[in-house]
Length: 162
Image (cartoon, rainbow, N blue to C red):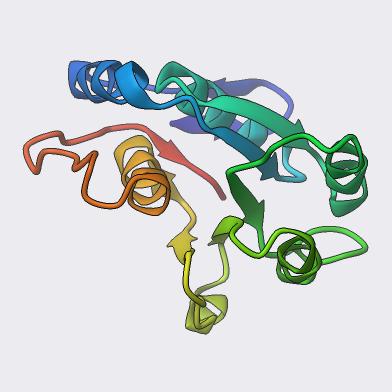
Protein backbone atom coordinates (compact mmCIF):
# COMPACT_ATOMS: atom_id res chain seq x y z
CA UNK A 1 0.00 0.00 0.00
CA UNK A 2 1.25 3.42 -0.86
CA UNK A 3 -0.36 6.43 0.78
CA UNK A 4 0.16 9.99 -0.36
CA UNK A 5 -0.97 12.92 1.75
CA UNK A 6 -3.84 14.76 0.08
CA UNK A 7 -3.91 12.35 -2.87
CA UNK A 8 -5.03 8.98 -1.51
CA UNK A 9 -3.51 5.56 -1.62
CA UNK A 10 -3.11 2.38 -3.59
CA UNK A 11 -3.04 -1.21 -2.45
CA UNK A 12 -1.79 -4.36 -4.16
CA UNK A 13 -3.21 -7.67 -2.97
CA UNK A 14 -2.31 -10.98 -4.55
CA UNK A 15 -4.76 -13.85 -5.10
CA UNK A 16 -3.82 -15.55 -1.84
CA UNK A 17 -5.84 -13.05 0.22
CA UNK A 18 -8.98 -13.75 -1.76
CA UNK A 19 -8.46 -17.50 -1.38
CA UNK A 20 -8.02 -17.05 2.37
CA UNK A 21 -10.98 -14.68 2.55
CA UNK A 22 -13.17 -17.14 0.68
CA UNK A 23 -12.31 -19.92 3.11
CA UNK A 24 -12.90 -17.69 6.11
CA UNK A 25 -16.19 -16.32 4.84
CA UNK A 26 -17.69 -19.80 4.59
CA UNK A 27 -17.81 -20.10 8.37
CA UNK A 28 -17.28 -16.63 9.84
CA UNK A 29 -20.18 -14.42 10.68
CA UNK A 30 -18.58 -12.65 13.62
CA UNK A 31 -19.13 -8.98 14.33
CA UNK A 32 -16.05 -6.80 14.79
CA UNK A 33 -16.08 -3.33 16.29
CA UNK A 34 -13.11 -1.52 14.77
CA UNK A 35 -11.81 1.74 16.28
CA UNK A 36 -9.26 3.70 14.22
CA UNK A 37 -8.90 7.46 13.97
CA UNK A 38 -7.05 7.44 10.62
CA UNK A 39 -9.76 7.33 7.94
CA UNK A 40 -7.67 5.73 5.18
CA UNK A 41 -6.43 2.93 7.45
CA UNK A 42 -9.97 2.45 8.79
CA UNK A 43 -11.47 2.09 5.30
CA UNK A 44 -8.83 -0.31 3.96
CA UNK A 45 -8.94 -2.50 7.06
CA UNK A 46 -12.75 -2.57 6.98
CA UNK A 47 -12.61 -3.75 3.35
CA UNK A 48 -10.16 -6.53 4.20
CA UNK A 49 -12.30 -7.76 7.09
CA UNK A 50 -15.56 -7.55 5.16
CA UNK A 51 -13.98 -9.43 2.26
CA UNK A 52 -13.25 -12.21 4.74
CA UNK A 53 -16.93 -12.41 5.70
CA UNK A 54 -16.88 -10.44 8.93
CA UNK A 55 -19.52 -7.88 9.85
CA UNK A 56 -17.56 -4.71 10.64
CA UNK A 57 -18.79 -1.74 12.66
CA UNK A 58 -16.39 1.20 12.46
CA UNK A 59 -15.73 4.10 14.79
CA UNK A 60 -13.22 6.93 14.57
CA UNK A 61 -12.97 7.33 18.35
CA UNK A 62 -13.76 5.59 21.61
CA UNK A 63 -16.74 7.93 21.99
CA UNK A 64 -18.21 6.74 18.68
CA UNK A 65 -17.51 3.14 19.67
CA UNK A 66 -19.37 3.64 22.95
CA UNK A 67 -22.43 4.89 21.04
CA UNK A 68 -22.34 1.68 19.00
CA UNK A 69 -22.04 -0.42 22.16
CA UNK A 70 -24.93 1.48 23.77
CA UNK A 71 -27.22 0.03 21.10
CA UNK A 72 -26.53 -3.43 22.58
CA UNK A 73 -25.05 -4.77 19.38
CA UNK A 74 -23.51 -8.22 19.84
CA UNK A 75 -19.78 -7.69 19.31
CA UNK A 76 -17.47 -10.70 19.09
CA UNK A 77 -14.16 -8.86 18.68
CA UNK A 78 -12.95 -5.37 19.49
CA UNK A 79 -10.19 -4.30 17.09
CA UNK A 80 -8.74 -1.04 18.34
CA UNK A 81 -5.83 1.26 17.75
CA UNK A 82 -4.01 1.85 21.03
CA UNK A 83 -3.48 5.58 20.49
CA UNK A 84 -6.76 7.40 19.96
CA UNK A 85 -7.85 10.98 20.62
CA UNK A 86 -9.37 11.64 24.07
CA UNK A 87 -9.57 8.01 25.31
CA UNK A 88 -7.01 5.32 24.47
CA UNK A 89 -7.97 2.03 22.90
CA UNK A 90 -6.67 0.15 25.94
CA UNK A 91 -8.85 2.18 28.31
CA UNK A 92 -11.91 1.69 26.10
CA UNK A 93 -11.21 -2.05 25.86
CA UNK A 94 -11.00 -2.33 29.64
CA UNK A 95 -14.41 -0.66 30.00
CA UNK A 96 -15.92 -2.81 27.26
CA UNK A 97 -14.58 -6.00 28.87
CA UNK A 98 -16.16 -5.05 32.20
CA UNK A 99 -19.51 -5.05 30.40
CA UNK A 100 -18.80 -8.19 28.35
CA UNK A 101 -16.10 -10.32 29.95
CA UNK A 102 -15.83 -12.78 27.06
CA UNK A 103 -15.11 -9.96 24.55
CA UNK A 104 -11.99 -10.67 22.50
CA UNK A 105 -9.65 -7.75 21.81
CA UNK A 106 -7.00 -7.16 19.15
CA UNK A 107 -4.88 -4.07 19.82
CA UNK A 108 -2.99 -2.44 16.94
CA UNK A 109 -0.25 0.13 17.34
CA UNK A 110 2.36 1.91 15.30
CA UNK A 111 4.50 2.52 18.36
CA UNK A 112 6.95 -0.33 19.05
CA UNK A 113 7.18 0.50 22.76
CA UNK A 114 3.47 -0.24 23.09
CA UNK A 115 4.00 -3.77 21.84
CA UNK A 116 5.05 -4.52 25.40
CA UNK A 117 1.36 -4.51 26.32
CA UNK A 118 0.79 -7.87 27.91
CA UNK A 119 -2.45 -9.11 26.41
CA UNK A 120 -4.79 -10.92 28.76
CA UNK A 121 -6.69 -14.06 27.82
CA UNK A 122 -8.65 -13.51 24.59
CA UNK A 123 -6.42 -10.57 23.63
CA UNK A 124 -3.57 -10.02 21.17
CA UNK A 125 -1.41 -7.21 19.76
CA UNK A 126 -0.58 -6.42 16.14
CA UNK A 127 2.08 -3.92 15.03
CA UNK A 128 1.44 -1.31 12.35
CA UNK A 129 2.04 -1.42 9.53
CA UNK A 130 0.39 -4.82 9.27
CA UNK A 131 -0.31 -6.98 6.25
CA UNK A 132 -3.77 -8.15 5.25
CA UNK A 133 -2.83 -11.77 5.96
CA UNK A 134 -1.30 -10.83 9.32
CA UNK A 135 -4.51 -9.05 10.28
CA UNK A 136 -6.75 -11.93 9.18
CA UNK A 137 -4.50 -14.44 10.91
CA UNK A 138 -4.69 -12.61 14.25
CA UNK A 139 -8.45 -12.08 13.95
CA UNK A 140 -8.92 -15.76 13.08
CA UNK A 141 -6.78 -16.88 16.02
CA UNK A 142 -8.91 -14.88 18.44
CA UNK A 143 -12.32 -15.71 17.01
CA UNK A 144 -11.77 -19.32 15.98
CA UNK A 145 -8.55 -20.65 17.51
CA UNK A 146 -7.08 -23.37 15.32
CA UNK A 147 -9.90 -23.17 12.79
CA UNK A 148 -8.53 -20.75 10.22
CA UNK A 149 -4.77 -21.04 9.77
CA UNK A 150 -3.33 -18.89 7.00
CA UNK A 151 -1.07 -20.94 4.71
CA UNK A 152 2.58 -20.03 5.01
CA UNK A 153 2.84 -19.61 1.22
CA UNK A 154 0.18 -16.87 1.27
CA UNK A 155 2.55 -13.93 0.92
CA UNK A 156 0.77 -10.61 0.96
CA UNK A 157 1.89 -7.36 -0.57
CA UNK A 158 -0.75 -5.20 1.12
CA UNK A 159 0.39 -3.25 4.14
CA UNK A 160 -1.95 -1.25 6.30
CA UNK A 161 -0.97 1.41 8.78
CA UNK A 162 1.40 4.22 9.48
